[in-house]
Length: 89
Image 1 (tube, rainbow, N blue to C red):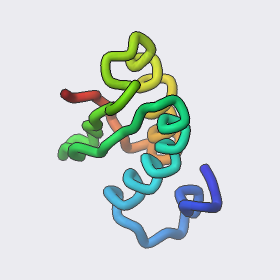
Image 2 (image 1 turned 120 degrees about the vertical axis):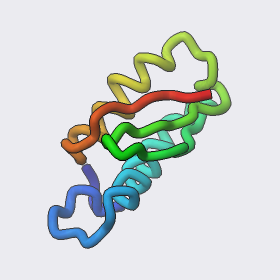
Image 3 (image 1 turned 90 degrees about the vertical axis):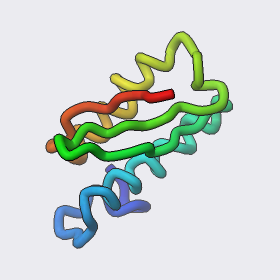
Image 4 (image 1 turned 60 degrees about the vertical axis):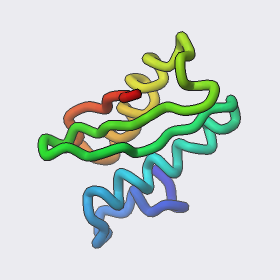
């Protein structure tokens, strides 16, 4: 994905959780530029990622599209083992 977080480095020694956090940190500025934010809530055993949208993203009509076409797509592109990304309240 980028050189800044190293998520594109296939030789990384980072754990799955650290890789997820790095990708979310890379996504965060885009959400913040629109008055929103994202928080990692948990990573389930089946590799389902639970996140909480905050700020302007919370309750936004486009939030579902942001989750599936933005956050989930980027996580799955970089970490194919991700099952899905779910927004929680």
